[in-house]
Image (spheres, rainbow over the protein chains, first blue to last red):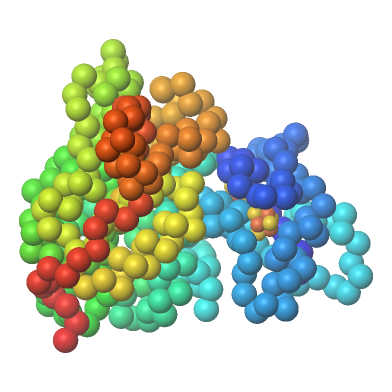
Amino acid sequence: MKLVIDQDRCKGCNLCTLVCPYRIFLPGKTLNRKGVVVPDLDRPERCTNCRLQKLYGRTLCGLCVMICPDQAISWEEEEPHEPHKVAIEY
Amino acid sequence: MSYQDWFRQDRLPHIYCSGCGNGTVINCTLMAVDEIGWKENETVFVSGIGCSSRASGYIVTDSLHTTHGRALPFATGVKLSNPDLNVVVFTGDGDLAAIGGNHFIHACRRNIDLTVICMNNQIYGMTGGQGSPTTPAGALSTTTPYGSSEPAFDLSELAVAAGANYVARWTSYHVKELTRAIGAGMRTPGLSFIETMTQCPTNYGRRNKLRQVTDQVEFMKNHTALRQKLDRMRESGQKVPADVIAIGEFVRRDRPAMGVRR
Ligand SMILES: Cc1ncc(C[n+]2csc(CCOP(=O)(O)OP(=O)(O)O)c2C)c(N)n1
Ligand code: SF4
Ligand code: SF4
Ligand code: SF4
Ligand SMILES: [Mg+2]
């Protein structure tokens, strides 16, 4: 699984940067095409959910998803051996 | 199902400002509903008027977006006419405690089997930032330009005094605890009142030296303490700072209730 931020929903409030115990979300620096500064993801594969959600069959931690007021954070299926640099999708 | 299935995806993104705490409270509510396993066609969301009250319109179940202050009378009608429905009320501090204040105390007194979730942002958000009955003393708003000089209502204590069966207060920072409290409230027969302190960055934070969304959420994180801890501090003669808000479960009891599923 991989962590993604929906560029159409995120409003750039940075609340996700406040709660992640691994500091995966970092305040972004550039505007996206909607004019929102979406947070950057720092090595999102560290998220417990990316690694263990399938194994446990439920969402672990999940603080970022719960606090995100705009329902912009989710996990997506990924191809086997997909390079992890493409964590934010447009 | 996941909590996402309870959202009307075609209505998202919602109209709330960036960082508005109302979105977080909807997440927590829908996660609690999803966990408890209620069915869409047996659940009704009712709300009054205000930013917070728009919440019911983003949910797939039947919902009633009623008139300002009157969410509880409408919800009472729904519940008493069909006690098999699960009825959840979204309301704001202005909606519930100002124009709807009387409905609030009498719904608690009657102990109607509703789950009432109040997004208390301490301001009238929708109409541009007028002071509400929960605006803290000293806070700036468009109607208190020199700082509010009135004492604020403690909605949770009010609900306890008026007779609600379950009362808890958390904040939009305490997402796990809030979700658990909403679930506990939904399971408790009788009126369950869950107050959530939420940030309104646009009309409260901006005027009160909390310019960033994260500033206001950090403020809530640092200026709240468990009710039991505050009680212990008072007992041992320690001074509790005036701006610390008590959070946690206030009451869980079994007074006679109305409209409980047969
Ligand atoms: C009868 C009536 N009086 C006044 C209004 C104007 N009005 C709309 S929302 C609102 C206050 C909302 O405050 P609150 O309930 O705290 O909701 P928030 O927007 O802060 O979430 C007021 C006074 C109205 N719509 N109807
Ligand atoms: S689920 Fe937890 S660990 Fe994973 S990104 Fe979200 S906050 Fe961080
Ligand atoms: S919490 Fe959600 S809306 Fe806010 S910055 Fe993070 S992803 Fe964007
Ligand atoms: S005005 Fe305040 S309460 Fe209303 S949507 Fe904006 S931040 Fe939220
Ligand atoms: Mg309000």
